[in-house]
Figure 1 (cartoon, rainbow, N blue to C red):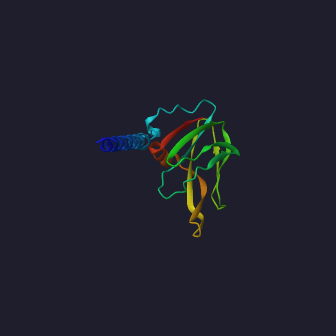
Figure 2: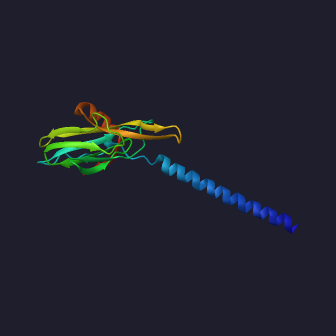
Figure 3: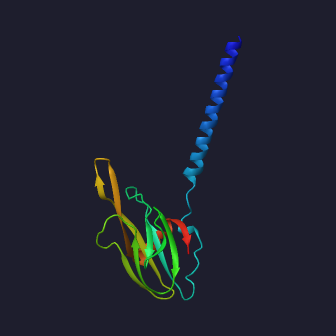
Length: 168
């Protein structure tokens, strides 16, 4: 009788442990699966500060895009990371800016040059060619990235839908 009781007690502990592990896994999926950042449209974005200009940087969520998180620079100075499906802005002094993005390959139209006056905004969209360098031996891809200046009218609607990663 004691052997049966020991077997049942061990089975019950094992089942309880498994249920707890499944519960924790399910909880993790709920927390991490539903934890989306709020869209840019849901935030009250402050106006461009007096004597400054604003550059928005954004990257659409593209299922087949290069998954990398390339660094973005303006006039050679780091400004942030291009998050897939995200947007952020930097307030900068008025002037000329060359925007570049970290990339594997070298192609045409990978940088943008813009002239910003006081109180003005510009929108830079980061796009990728996900299979710039690829191979079949170990099945790899290395994307190349582009920083494209997009007209404000088109970009504002795109940015509004993306996750907001902050400003300055």
